[in-house]
Every structure is written in C-alpha cells, then in structure tokens.
Image (tube, rainbow over all chains, first blue to last red; front, side, top):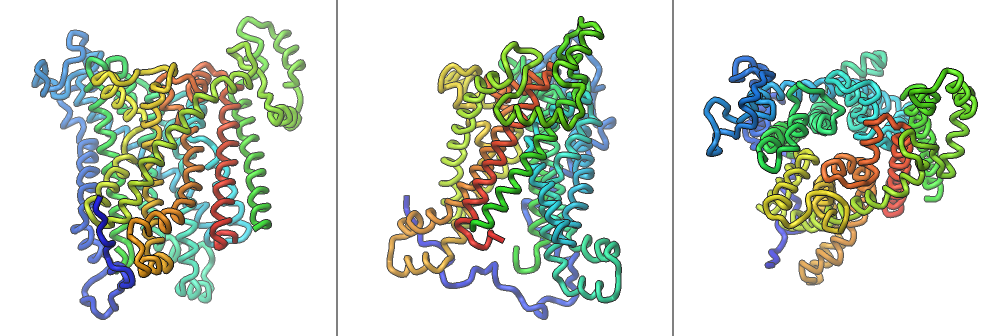
Length: 313
Length: 304
C-alpha cells in the first residue's frame, strides 16, 4: 500500500471552515434560492428525490399503472418467472407468486403500504418526540431530566421484540403496526429536537421575544419550531426509513401486515419456501425495499447538507 | 468523576426499575394468568384455586413486589408451554445468541474500523466515497432479506456454508455477517470522524513535524485515541444486536433467545417473552452504563 501525504496539508484550515463574508454574496440570494441551488448540485439529494418521487408517483397511480388486480388468484399460473427468464411471459413482467397473483401489480400496490406506514409512523412519533424534545430543550432543568429519563427508558426496550409482543397482544394489522411503531420510534426525534431547541433558545431573537412579553406557547410555536424544522425533517426521513424496515421485518415474522395485503416484507415471507428454486420471489420485493429506503436516506442526508449554514457544507 | 459515576449508576438503576414495571405489565396485559395456567379444560373453581395459589388475587403492587423479588434471584416463573422453569430455558438458549452477537460484533468492527481509518486517511477520494456508499447501503438493507440473500449466494449457489441450524461454527458465519453488517455504518462513521479529528490535532501535527512516518502517526497516535469512543459505541451496538438477533435467528433457524422469543410470542407464552424482554433490557442498560462511564473517564467535558 502506498501512503500518500495526507491532504489537505496540516496547518492550513480546511476550505470547509472558511466563511464568506455576508457582503460577498449577491443581494438577491434568499435562503430558499441558496437551498435550491445547492439541491440542484447535490448528487445524493437528486438521486434520493428522484427515487422517492418515482415510488410516490407509482403508489398514487397504482390503479392506473398496475397491469393486473394484485389480489386476483390463478392457480394455473403459479410461480411464473420474470420476463428476463427463459420461461417468462410478457403478460407478467415480474412473474407470479405461489397463488398465481401478478408480482408487478403486488409490488406496485405494496409501495402504498410501505409509504403509508413510513409517513404515518413518522408523523405519530414525530409529534411525541418533538413535544418531548422541545419542552426539554426549552425549559431545561427538571423537565429536561424527566424527558432524558423517559428517552433512556425507551431506548432500553428492545424495539423488535416489544413491537412483536404488542402486535401479537392486539392482533397484527396495518393500523396496529402504524400505532406500535409510532409509539416506539420517537426517541431520535426527542434527542435531536432537544439539542436543536437548546441552541435556538440561546439566540438573541428568543431573548427579544421573551423581553417583549410573549408567552412560552408563542415563543415555542413562532420562534423555536420554525428554526428547528430542518433538523426535524432530517430525523423524519431517518425514522420513515426505520419504520418501513421494521414493518417489513414484523410482516416477515408474521405479526405485521396480514395477508392478502401485498406488503413487501410479507411477500418475502411468502416467497421464502420457494427461494431455492424461484429466487426472484424474494429478490424482487427486497430490492424494492432497498431502493425505497436508500432513496429516503439519500433525501434526508441531502436535506441536511443543503440546509446547513452557508460555508459549512 | 465519582459524583458523575454515582449519578449515572442511580439513573441506570431507576431505568432498570421502570423497565421491569413495563415488562411486568406486559405479562398482565396479555390476559388472565390464572386461566392461562389452568389450561383450557379447567373449571371455574380450579381457576379460582390457582388464582389464590399463585397470589394472583393480591393487589398488583404486591404481585409486582413478589415478581421483582424472584426476578432479582433469576427466578422468572414457569412457562405456559415448556415444563421447565423460564430461567432454565433462557440459560439453554442464551449461549447461541451471545455467540452470534459476539461474532457479529467482531465482524462489524473488523470491517468498519479499517474502513473508517482508510476513509479518514484518504478523505474525499474514491476510497472515502466507497466506504460511505457501503455504509449507506448497509442502512438501507432489511437485515432478514440480506440474510436470505446470503443463504442464496453462499449456501445454495456456492454450497460453501450450511443453510440453517447451529451444529458447528460454520452455521454462525452467515448470520453473524447479516447481523454485523447492520452495526457497521455507525462504527465506520464514528471511526472516520474520530480519526479526522485526531489527525488535525496538535500532537499529531507535532509527531508529523518530528518526521514520523505517516503510517506510524496513523497507528500510534491516531487510532489509539480514536478507538476508545468506538469501543463505547460497540458496547451499545452489541446491546442493539442482541435485540435485533430475533429476526436473524428466525431466518437462519438458530435456536437462540430470539427464536425462543418469537415462538413464545406466537404461542402466547408471555412469561418467557417477558423474561427475555427484561434480560435484554438489563444487558442493554449495563452496556450503556459501561459505555457512558468509559467515555466520561476519557473526556472530562462529558461529566456535566
């Protein structure tokens, strides 16, 4: 292995640290314009936005784009391989499953389930976590201690196991999975919004708002929340991805979304007995999951970079 | 430091207490225990007798006290399904899960630390970007699907390793990779950032100025200082992996705690489920406590 001298040379500050004086920037450049310019030149963000946008479009237009009814069974057409396979047919591009249902149509309708779970679980956990985090960060002291304690306790519980146990107590269904995940995945929201709130609280404009006699409710809503929104969006994408992966795992273990719904995790579970001779029955839904989660993560990373203060990208 | 340690230990104990209340409630929410113990053919008199015999007619607080007292002595009661006590069940399944967790952690560290060091050393080159891509992909793959894919490649196509079971060390290779891959991205990023921070610090600059070879600086000064937070993170990741092994054990039919938990949930054997939740939570609490103390010992700023 050849060892190159490390670049950049030590001693000179990394270019990332140099902050341009405000006056150098053209006056027309609003924060939104800066974000747009950065977004259009950020490869990861563009790829992520493209993947997620495509999947959202497919999910919304499912009845129009799906070639078949995702629930229509046809035992005479069981386990037809995808079109690139020698025995594939143009009628079923991605083949059929063990009950002869069109795999592409199930995949398309499955995107609705993944997106629905991701968005609703992130919304519920976002409300819980942000409330806790903002209160802890704004009030500090005893409130902070209580919230930290609640977060620590929640982190000590093994998520998959508790989610499985709760889903089994109530009975697995789409609604139960959303609620269970929503009530379990708020920890990162709380941790991040707490830190962000503490930073914003120390700023002059919050002191000014306090001095003007505004109540805590108004300060939290008008001053704090808009300023932690970027951090919030980044966590929301992470937790959306997390919820989608967990739903897939719960459904795979049989305690999440129930048949005949075309959840991608469930499709993998149903395909498992056939994976040795028809590997595509688990490869296809798995790749769909990877693409969706990768897209959401890239989007989140992109938002984080784009909304970072000027000069710190 | 002592004050910080005492406070931190106190928090850990109270969290442990809260978690045990939660785990106790899980058992009670699962249904009427007396009916479950008595079985489907019991008369209402028999159920009532069992209720008194097991103290299930007592107030909930008293029941919790007696349950916690037994749990403290590693007595988790009886399974509804298996004849042996829950403690024996856990003891017989624990080694498999611990073995899996340890190998998975070793796999994760052995890949992630060198990758993180390389990424830091060759910052902003293709090596850095490849490492980043591997970690981004690692976070996007469902672990159970990754496990199944490994089976298809290495067991079915290449026939190198067995599909499932836990007869020999070979059975642990694929599950450990599937589980460890999940813990890799966090370790890699922390190693990379730690190395970048250390490499730009004054004492590394001095070592460089003295004319020490870059590779020696990297190992002797860089890695040594960057690795301790990584060890702390590894402890926490190990706790997560024990919890996450339920999915991997199901994929590979490893007869560990996770598999036991899954089967017990499916047959409503909640004394077993509850005990596993409790044990995993306690291990996690102990590991995070150790990690926090280790970090605080090294970085006085954290002792606030």
